[in-house]
Length: 121
Image (cartoon, rainbow, N blue to C red; front, side, top):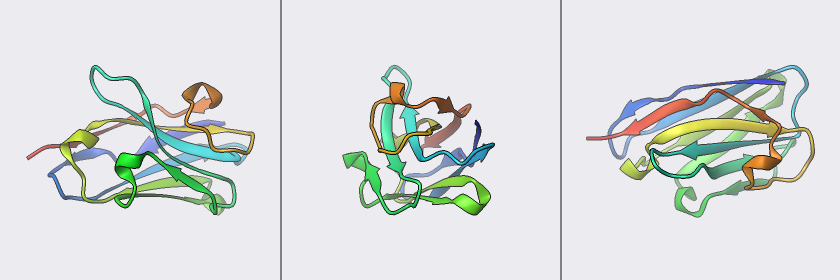
């Protein structure tokens, strides 16, 4: 499985942005978004199961970010609203063939190349 992330950019605080992650090959069971800000460790942002019913979020993005997927397109999305400067990071999509959302990056087999999100006035 190969993952291709896209949609990052430079936006102002309060703006919205939508990230996409297209998977090639077999549809992964679990997909997730992680992010890494300069000088900080990578952190789990959001995860989604195969059916799209189960979702999990980092506390600081709950109510602002929405994860979704379109299995017919083998694509996962992250709608980010009310962006804050602290959301600035490189965002990575990740996937694993097993069910079960986990916040541990090491559990994910497949990773995309990352897309930069910068929130600045």
